[in-house]
View 1 (cartoon, helix red, strand yellow):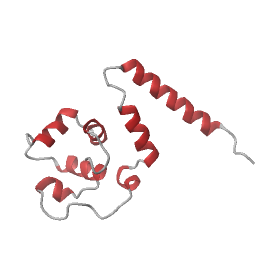
View 2 (tube, rainbow, N blue to C red):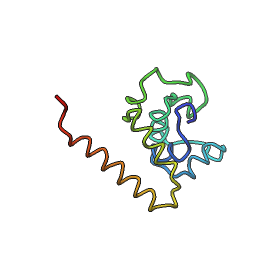
View 3 (cartoon, rainbow, N blue to C red):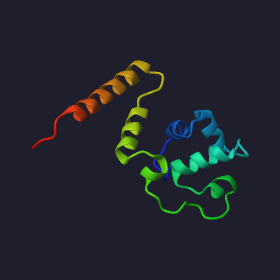
View 4 (tube, one colour):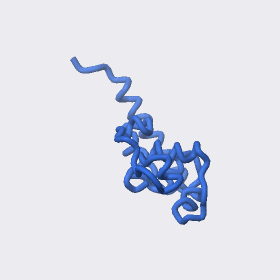
Length: 115
C-alpha cells in the first residue's frame, strides 16, 4: 500500500471496501480475502495476487504502469490524494473542494486550443 503511494483510506476507496476492512488487513485480523478483493488490491498496488493472499511467490506483478493497473493517471492519483487530505467529517469543505476542482477542469476543457 505504501509502496503504491496509498494511504489506508485511499486503498479502501480504490478497492471498494470500508477503511475498517483495510485496518483488519493491516493488523492481521483478516485471515483470508475473496479473490475479487485480492485482485482489486493487486490492481491498486502492483503486488501479485498470490503474494497478497499467501505471502508466497513473486511479490510484485510484472512491471505495469500505474495508470494501466488502476485506470488512473498520475495527475488523478495526486488530485485524489489532495482531496483525501480534507477530513471526511468536514463535508462542506470536501464538497467545496470537489466542486471547485470539477469547475476548473471543465473550464480548461471548454477553452479553445491556442493557435
